[in-house]
Length: 108
Image (cartoon, rainbow, N blue to C red):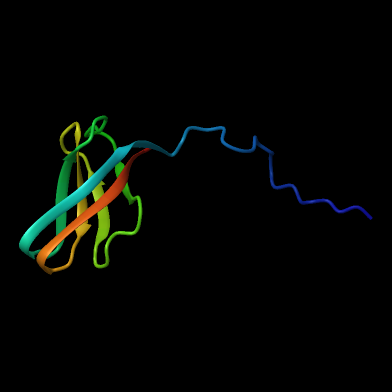
């Protein structure tokens, strides 16, 4: 008796044959320090990054786990050569600082 897998249409090429869904633009470090910090909502951190353009969509991915209470939210380019990343940070911080390395990918 032979077994045969069902056919679900045409068979295509296997593996990476199309364009990539994202391209690594670079890695940046989001950092800030302050004696007393009060943050309600999302904080935006802008940094220089060569290769960013306003017409593209971006995503920021932390290189490692952010500190407790911090979360990387979104990523936009409103000026060529700069990237702005949204961060959720603890509401009140005394003598606090953070440094979060993130990779920036261009989508599409």
